[in-house]
Image (cartoon, rainbow, N blue to C red; front, side):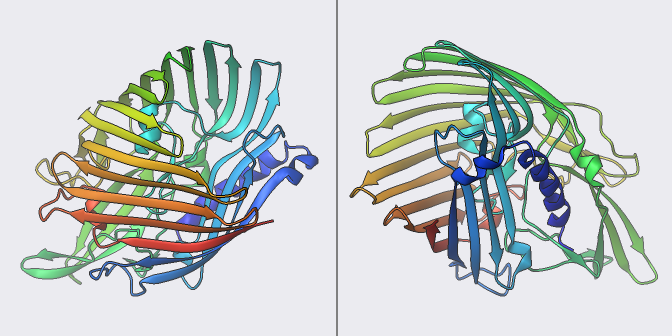
Length: 451
């Protein structure tokens, strides 16, 4: 059974609870789009799986923007023909909205909020979890719980609390006969063997899956306040105490001398952290600029026994200035990212102070990014919506180009396209989450129909 089975079971339970709170008439106002598309890996050096092209059939359920209905949602799912490890279910938002007054509103469910400009623009998954079915194109998902929001002309205040936690959704994987199945090009399998006494020694893996309650039943709370002129100078302060969206993975190892075979046990656990955020943004005419700051303070407690080798996280400060120009049909964005601290070490019987930790906290640490967005109307029902971005870190480890576009042919039909291309340096850092997918250059083409 793929490891995603537990996560999907958790999501289904959550969906049942939220949908049960919504009135029946709310479902009639949800737009449904059926999609068929082909995902192709176009690099000549691609070798993650035997197939280089996959066909998908999927659907998206989404509430219209600015809808006044009680139930709001954005849900998409896809089935890969003949490749079950690539099936996905993505729920960025699903919540029930209850307006108490003109300025006061209450939300129950999973909802995206702008907790941090940095986290939203760089898709790091520090504040809100990510859908990382494709790690080169992560998507934000909302926090899950109870939200109370008060809006005034120059002040907005939000409270958040939750007894539930849904972590990042990464690529699905499966272990069979002690080995990771080679069925998902986005999951990087650990080595199948190591050299001991100049001999290649096979490794068998076991994954100790935690129960759903051990992962889901985790408390969170937070608050944010925004003040100032939305069309001028505005600032925001945020705080949250919550589980880290990426599960920490610990491991144990042993050597069977009789069979000269290594045995490795893997186990994920939930770590907590406190987040402090501050944004200052200035908007004038077609220009919007600002700086976003996050201080992340992981808790020192962990849930691993001393026999397990596990990661230790250190505090980090993240700073991201940005500037945007909105010229109507075309918009440009330039941003910079710097991370100070946030190193990862390991503790336990197999910890090696000079070795590379199993996990990394951030996909990269210092980088620049430039992007262009367009929304071009050709006729009453025809519109091109697209975005292209270029990202490169200071150390030259990689260059990443991402592209996505949707061409609406009519009120019912549309064409969609996505692409990611990675160029990695010859000696890129082993922990870099982007450069390891150098051979996974991807092109997706498809069509959608709304009914």
